[in-house]
Image 1: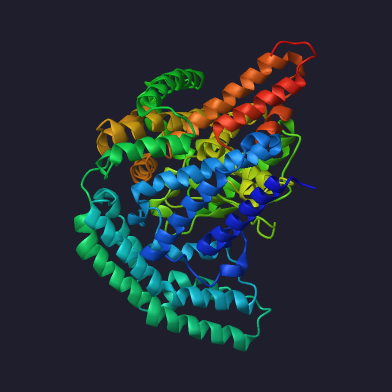
Image 2: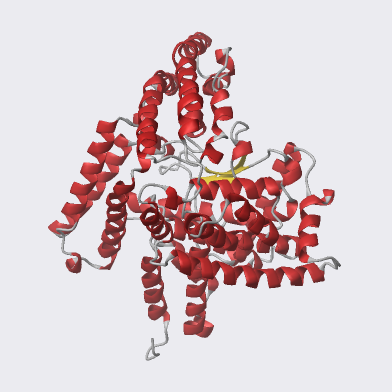
Length: 569
């Protein structure tokens, strides 16, 4: 029987997990929980205030527990939950809810959640109809939040918001069947009677015509006439209310470290110099006689490095993924049970989003994980980046990290789905380098792709801190990126705009990778012949997503347990 304090903690964890699903129906949907598929998050000012008050109350309750009385496993649960709760309360001061729309997401593409919904039964479609009917309320609430942001001077940069009107316009259809929200009704299963399908489709057209499109027309007028002209001209987080404190917070939140912006900037400069030297070696190996800058231009423009159609590009990504799969046993003992697939990023968001991303499967295993790839303009999607990208986003990168986390036994649900960016993205970037251990970088251009991706994340340290804390302009950041990376201007521009919209998040990748790589070398040095890469990689993933200091303590204990008896620690 568990100690009463441990029972009380687990009851708190479970209650907060359930509260999170109720308060964020979208999160429930993404986790495969269909109970709230008929609603959106309540984004009223009253609901936001109530959620923030509840978070403060939970933190106070949590601090009443005696951490020292817990065993190692329970301390890990407690530490992770406490870390999350402390940051949730700390970030309340910055009122991020006043900026609910970015060029990468918001109510203007709320239909994207349909990608994770089952749409097998009539109830699934009834839930979607209920969500469609809720769009006017969601739009009205979001408009209130944005007006609050305008009044407080808490807005996104105008250069990013100029991308949003075209996204809103995609919702302003004259034919309801052309609405992005109508997509699920075009592929209804034959298991539903024809009359049921026809009824649901007719009701969908009605609610789109009568509720959804008018709501977006009102939102378009507000956005274009009132909001966009009132957004800020600057790009730095430091320009926001209490902006310097905000950037310090997000840098620490995403990296899970105490590194300052200046320290991170210097780390980035050192990494850029190191990776450039390795790129010069590849340039010489392939016999390219021009400068590194000219080699970058060659990599960006030579036709042989690109697929000639979206269909060929998608097939290429799937082929690369199948090349990786059989090599995984070289570097892991434990493989996830959950499968993954490769899908195209939806056309309506592809021009404004990144090269690829991963979407986790359902917690109960009812939905696979998916690696989404950008097929927009295949002429700017080089073949040489596909291996490193697939290792990062699919296997053994995010799919392993998310799937194995969800499969952890005997841990609270919040631990199974936790996501700390420095751990998760650090692992993804570390996974790119595992391609060498798996023998997947025999082609020097694939190696150049890996170096390009490593450079991409090193450049992030420089440009993110540069723009948000050192006064760099957007163009200065683009120029620095282009000078040090073979990525195309399309990708670079989208990346820079992402860093502007999401301050600090991009810092986590390289900082996390460097910490995991350092732990690997520490383990190799300490264990010598006893070191096995498969065991180390399993050990990194067996905690699930945790702050980097927590991971370091876990790996140190793992090393100590494997030292020869009597060896010094």
